[in-house]
Length: 306
Image (cartoon, rainbow, N blue to C red):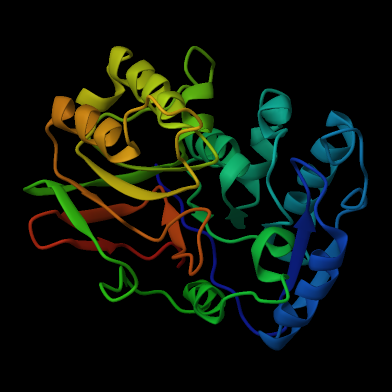
C-alpha cells in the first residue's frame, strides 16, 4: 500500500543526513540559509560531517543517523546532504519497521536511488527525487527554479512537468499510466539479484545518470532488458544523462543507445526531462501514480504529500 507523508509547515524541523559520500562542507553549510528562508528549522545528523574514505562515515554511523532521524518526533522531513556512493551498503541493515512507523518526507537522488527503491518496497512510503543540499542547493550558483520545486512539500496538488523547462522528444508514441519509480540507472541495475530488486511491472520508469560512457549505458540497459525489466514497464521517463559522452573515437552516440533499448521495449517514452544531475532540476515524488502522454509530451504526477 502506498503511503504519503505529511506536508511540511513553516516552523517544522528538517533532519539532514549524509548516507552516502562525504558532502562538500562549504556547500552544505551554505544551504542552511535556504532552508531557513523556507521557514524551516535544521537538525544535523550526528555523523553528517564524518569521513571514512569515500564514505560519509562508517556503515554503522550512517545507519544510526538514518534511524535516529526517522525516530525523532521533532523531525518532519529528512533531506540528504549529497550522493556519491554508499547507500547500498546500509540498505540490508535498515530497520524498515522504524520507517513504517514514522512516515516522513525523505528527499534526495543519485546514489539515494537505492534507498528510494528499498524504502518504498519495504514500507510503501512515497519518497522524493530532488536536488540535495551540498550537491546542488548549497552551491554559490544554485538554480532558483530548482529551489522553487521544493514548494511541492508544503501544499498537496498534482505536478505537471513544465514544457518550457527543457526540449522534450517523443521516442515511442502513446499514453501510459502507472506508479512512477526509478532514478539513477546505475543504482537501479545494482539492485538486480538482491532483496531490493527493482520492480518495473506496469510502472512508469524514470532513468538518469552522469559520467557514464554510452557503452556503459548500453551495458546497464542491456542488463535491465535481459532481466525483463524493460518489457515489464508501462512507459519510460528519460531524464538527464549528464556528460555521458564517449571517451574513444569508435562509439555509438548516447541517443543511439537509448533509442535501441526503448524501441525493443516499445512502450510510450519521452526523453529530455530535466531530472537528474542537471540545472534546473525538476523534483518529483516516487511511488505515486503518474501519467505520461508521450505523443503530446506531457507528464503529470500525483502529489507526494497529504
